Length: 153
Length: 153
Image (cartoon, rainbow over all chains, first blue to last red; front, side, top):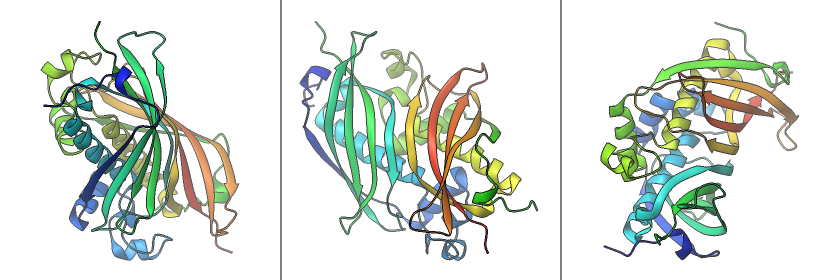
């Protein structure tokens, strides 16, 4: 088990690489059928009539796959123990379609950290995340605003 | 079948109400197990040791439930036919935990629209969305940036 990484231990500029994950056609359609049942996420025929051209994953599926990769990385590196979730996300952008069988990976870099004004037991960490496909094209960017436990005194 | 709502038909200030949807404990845990396996989204015991206090849904589950409600509303109102997905989301904020059995609903209001600089067949519509729980407390806000088909000439 790794040592716990607390708010104080996270440095601005520190970077993580995470993934890969591959999502199948069945998984893409199943996610869309449950949460984002727009025709272009459900069938090739409907997608061909739009700028997507062919079947692509719901953008919310891509965010969920980012989280899956990121949590696995945090848990492998001891960051999990101090994670207290997130306040939100800024500037989420879906740049390219994610297709069935695409293999995604990601990078994150800490860009800002600050103490919580109201809760001394936690701090706020802002990162910049980019998700790439197997051609190294960025498919999504976002700036999560995470909460981390401060070191116990 | 409703008449198609194109980019030109969407007015700034126009509002939609959508939902409700209720997510069970089993669904919350299943989503977290697949995409956001942090302990406080998986067990009451782990959640009790954090500021969450008790089991709560992954924020990405809440965004997916927003999309589920919103797509159903669009499909009921003819908006679906012109939807071309979204470029992204600004200022996503998770304000309160979503608990097992919470019943969510949402409101959206169009705050900005502009023609695409590069693609005359589509336009950009920015909205402000708020998701409420059954106590009418806001649990999440976000500003989606959607793409809509322009009226064929």
